[in-house]
Picture 1: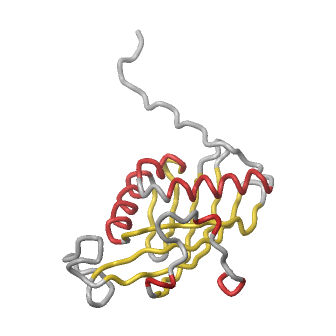
Picture 2: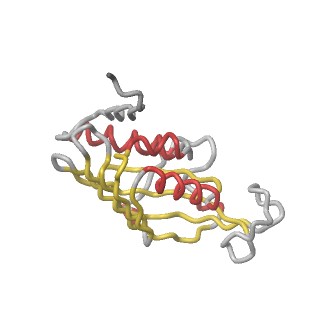
Amino acid sequence: MASSTPTAAPAPARPPFPPFTRETAEKKVKAAQDAWNTKNPSIVAPAYTEDCIWRNRDAFLQGHAAIVRFLEGKWSRESGYRLRKELFAFTDDRIAVQFWYEYFVEGKDGKGDGKGDGNGKGGEKQWYRCYGLEDWTFAADGRMRKRMMSGNDVAIAEDERWFRDGVDVNTVPISEKHW
């Protein structure tokens, strides 16, 4: 007799697959950039294995539920989020990425007081640019099984922003001093 217990559907594969070439590694990086720029955890999380291990600065997490919770919190605090990722290095099943993203928080100290409306009204807006590196390891199905991130936030003035609304983040010139 067949079991009536539902089984989880297998996770969809996420091409390109390892081993990576320069071309496929670059595609993987830009696909991640595009997913993260949606600011939608349900779009981002499926790119990771169900038991994916993350370190994001000082936060250590594992699994889809933890990733979704983390991203929901991140994007509720970081308004105006815009990200660019570039391939740094790669091997068969690993990719290293350099990234920059900008966001703002509201509040007199730039840490967000919860009183603003997300448009700078009701609280002072402080912009930041995060500079960082990520180390990714992939499963054979093309999903990421490990993500290690290190980043540093630098306060910037609004007129120093690179990734303004309407600008393609891929076309912004970034000088060597920022690479």
